[in-house]
Structures are given as structure tokens and as C-alpha cells.
Length: 297
Image (cartoon, rainbow, N blue to C red):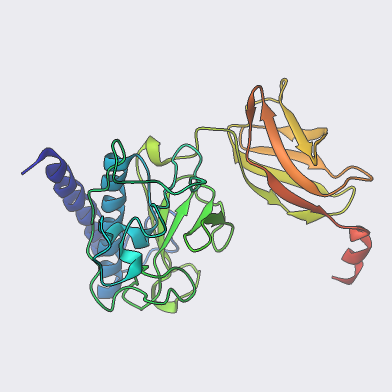
């Protein structure tokens, strides 16, 4: 058995063992709801997520990137039953950078070193993945209740069909990569099964990154929180800008910057600038007379 396969086998056995122990004692993983016993479907869902997390780890070790769950069973070749099972479909693979927590802006040719795809890393049985991708992504694996499994980066939900990370569902509430199963009720609730990736490499982005604005639209005088990573413990010489204009923060920390929308502000992109490093841009809308609208809410 090769070293690579030995590591894969070890990780799979270890992760499944943990999942089954949690199931037997009624434990709930971090991020889940109340303590409760697991049924057969929950245990099966845990085993699925463990296998997919293991597959993501192996794909990362081979290529240096993570992938949507749909891609994990892909082949390197066009002789597949479904177009979405060719990892090079579309001219290259959609890859998620651990450095930024987002998709690379361009597709990656995973036929060339040092990013060679050696998958498939898992096998999805017929009937256990979505053909049309309703509500999520074509080819995405389905849980024992027939609903999609969801993959999150620390910036939000992975949306392969959009080629983007969005603030749907759990938004940016995970500070590391995570997999979610909505379990029996099929909606986000306290019974969700949440499997967090372990290890520092699967934590927050390593560059200055905005993950969300709360709220993303407001009027002059209203307070906004810029959430993200690597802003710096104090502002120092760093800057916060809206539509190219500097803002005066109310507070500044490594994970959050707070500011009040100034009078006469125009909507536009919010960015954090630290030395030569410029964060990703996040669109902010200024609402005219928003304070008066609140009277009718």
C-alpha cells in the first residue's frame, strides 16, 4: 500500500470512529444543536461527511487546493456518464484557495504538475447525487433524506454554479472549513449535523480578507461592522475605504472594524488596506432617508 493510500485509510478509519462514538453516546459535534441520540440515517450522514472531508484532504495534498463536493468523484478525462464528472469540464477545475478562502479567479489545469488531479477521491452511488442540481449544484452528493450536503469556507457557502462564496444559510459563521447536513427536516435548524475540518491549514484565510458587512446597506449615521480576518489588532497605518474615500473607524480589531456611515457618503466598494496589501472589495449600498424608513418597519 502506498504512503498516500495509507494516510487516506488512516484518516478515514479515525474520522468514522469519532463519528460513530459521537453517535453512540448521543454527542453533538461543534456547531450542532442540543445533545440527542443519533438514528441510522444520522450515522450514515456522518460517515458520508467524514469520507468527503477525507477526500478534500487528499485532493488538497495532491493539488494544493480544495474543491466543491460535486468534484470529488470526478475523473481526469471526458469519458464520463455526466458532463460534470470531468474535472476539466469548462476548460479547467474550479479550485478553492486556502490562502483566500475563495475560488481562484481562473480555472486550473489539473493535468500538470504541481497540481495533478489523482481522483476520483470518493464514489457517489447512482441515486445519491443530484443530476439537475436543483437548489445547489449539478452532481452534488445527497444526504440520506435526499437533500444536498453543503460545503462552507470561513467566508461562506461554496456555490460552484456561481463560481463564488455567498452569505447564504450559515454565512461566515464558521471560522474554518465545514460541511453541513440539514438532517431530517431538510432546513437549517438546531438538528443540523456540522462537521468542522481540523488542522490550522483549514482555518481562516492567511491574507487580509473581508467576509461580510453587517448590514450590507444602511443610511448616513448608521453603524456598520466589517467582519473578516487579518485586519490587525490595531489600526496603525492601515486604512478603511468606502468608494475610494477614507473612513474613520469607531473601533478596530483583527476580526472586525466598526464605522458610522458619514453624511453624504456614496455607495461603493469597502476595502481594508494594510501596507501594500489590499483586501477583497465588498459592495456597500447607502440608503437615502433610511432612518425615516425604520419608522415603518
